[in-house]
Length: 79
Image (cartoon, rainbow, N blue to C red; front, side, top):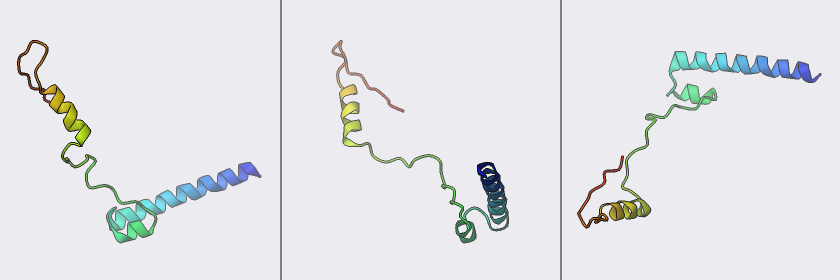
């Protein structure tokens, strides 16, 4: 019985994937139809938008941009 249920679930998953791909092909992954079919719209960019550093990040940068051990001024560029 459990094997039969697993087979049915696998068939349903395959059918669902094909249906969603068909909707994406016809309407696009950014369409309302794609969302209605259960698809999640892709993000417009995989990178995070740049924002000002948080207070903890600016504290680290301030500490690093200070005077080094030799008493000389140094600057550190963080990626």
